[in-house]
Amino acid sequence: MIEIKPVLEAREISKTYPGESPVYALKPTSLRFQPGEFTAVIGRSGSGKSTLLRILGTLDKSDTGELIIEGHGVSRLSEAELARFRRRRIGFVHQDYNLFPEYTAWENVIFPIRLDGATEDRAKTEALLDRLGILRCRDRFPHELSGGEQQRVSLARALVTEPAVVLADEPTGNLDAENSSRVAELLRFACDEYRQTIVMVTHDAAMADYADRLLRIRDGVVTE
Image (cartoon, rainbow, N blue to C red; front, side):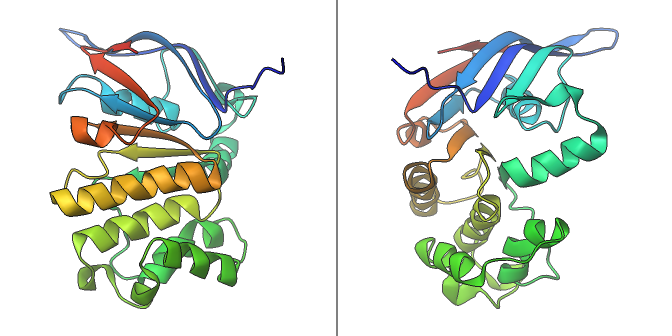
């Protein structure tokens, strides 16, 4: 039997914020994420969800252990190499959308491609926007879009570079129930259609129903 190698692997990662009373945000944790797997991480506010996601996304460094993405030990990369690797191989979907207000939806979506000095595949990008139901919004600015539309633009930006891993931090936190379900369905679609490995942090148990796998985190301890 051929062993399928994980796209993302964390080996004994941990994070402690020092101080008079140190905060053990993430206890030593080992996790493996397979290609095309949708994982939901659920826990209360302050449980360590965002700390875990930031480390998995290389936005924060673990105090211990090692993070491996597509066979690369990312802790060995320089800051410039890490920034380039993150831009190309990791997509982020944020709760507050993180769109540039002065850019149109189209310009927001292709931003990471242009930042990398490349030119977008127009037909492929239009097809992605169409599948997400926002092609009609391409020339609108963020303030002209609904919350659901802004989140779908954020999702398109995360997918447009065809990253190995997509990390979603409370992507439905600012949305009503209908739009929350729509975004969760789109994440499920991205996983199934593009074989993206998706890790979604949420406090909403209903959103976890869309995932293949559920991790719970409490006081920095992750259980499956």
